[in-house]
Amino acid sequence: MSLRDNKMALLRQLSLESEPISLSDLLKKIGLGFKERSVRRWLRDLIQEGSIKKIGQKRSTKYLAINLSLQNQKETSSCFSSASLAAIELIKKPIFEREPIAYSDEWFDHYKPNSYFYLGSTLREQLLKAGQRASNQDPAGTYAHQILNRLLIDLSYNSSRLEGNTYSLLDTERLLLHGNSAEGKLDEEKAMILNHKEAIRYLVDQAPRLEVSYNTICTLHYLLADGLIQPSEAGKIRLYGVRISGSAYLPFEDPKRLKQQLEKIVVKASQIKDPFEQSIFLLIHLSYIQAFVDVNKRTARLAANIPLIKNNLVPLAFHNILTEDYMSAMLAVYELQNVKPIIDLYVYSYMRTCAAYDSTIKSMNLDLIRMRYRQERRHIVREIILQNLEQKEIASYTRNVAMKLVPKEALSDFVEDVLEDIALIDESRLAGLGLDIEEFRSWAQRNPRQQ
Image 1 (cartoon, helix red, strand yellow):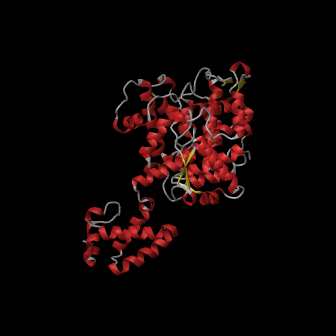
Image 2 (cartoon, one colour):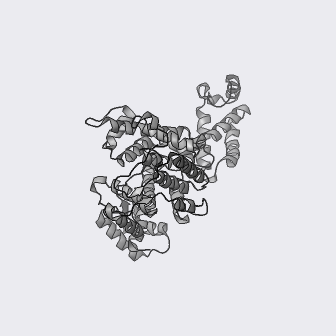
Image 3 (cartoon, helix red, strand yellow):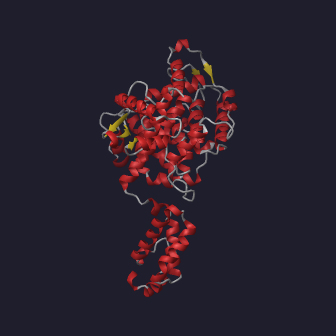
């Protein structure tokens, strides 16, 4: 890898950390192939570039990635690899120097689900390690529900911002949570953000039943485009040609072919097993096809979250992406069928999103074990009462059953949660246990301290 690529890998790792990290711990995490002397030099470079900051002195020195405001970032961010920068240089030439190019069926057909990958195995492992937040037993959408308000604000704000919306993050929060519109803003901007809210809620609420399908994509487009385009065009394949500003790409115009190709895209996407690979595939190809008269990239951005939300992974909120960088990455897809820049943006932003949402969960002081194993906890409480167990039997029974229901690393906290529920239980806390009052009173008589 080039110097820039190594620095980017280092910055990605730092972006994963929600707290400052020492050099020794950083070296352990980035693995073999990174010499301490070189890492020290790259850290100095990143500090000078303003991407990270140094905290403390000498042996107590630690490093932290900086969540820079978009206004203060450079014209091209540090997230791009050298190969991506080379592609971007090609699409930054004046448009009259770039050859017009049509949709490439060959490029799409070349992709074979689960044998060809846009994201290499190392990247997929890195993303999974960063994004996994729940057990395989949790219902789809569990994690997204936990962070729903934060997700509504961040994804609505960032996706709208990438379309030129001038609402600030604070304005977006006030609109979504309190219904307060920002002064001096266009009605179209307000509608764009509120439409995102509806579409995101749809993804989260429908997560257990949600599938990557033609109807799902059209529903997302309808929710995002409602009131912004003609009613007859929302959720419907476009009937005429479109052109992309500043691009030499010419999407095809035949509605019948558009419908057929969108169906092929969702069928191929639905076959992809890895959630991150499925996510980046949807982001790329739903943007590339331009199936609708407008709101194509917004639809692609939310569709990219379907596999993440379903699998209880941290959603992609498009944190810390410059509009200029995003458009350059999309142009590289349109005109060169080069996915390297959009992959760099995806990975960079996802790592930042994971770190940001870890901080959110910490600030909310959520008991994740209590939330994650709610059904298992209630099952044990119910059985304790139905079996009329006495106080001296409860702790050992709880631990023996819990060993079969939850992972070893969660066992101690889970048992503590069950015993806490037993200590606090009364007739007002029987909801969801499937018990009647008489069953509870019979048990309570044997355990008078629980009354």
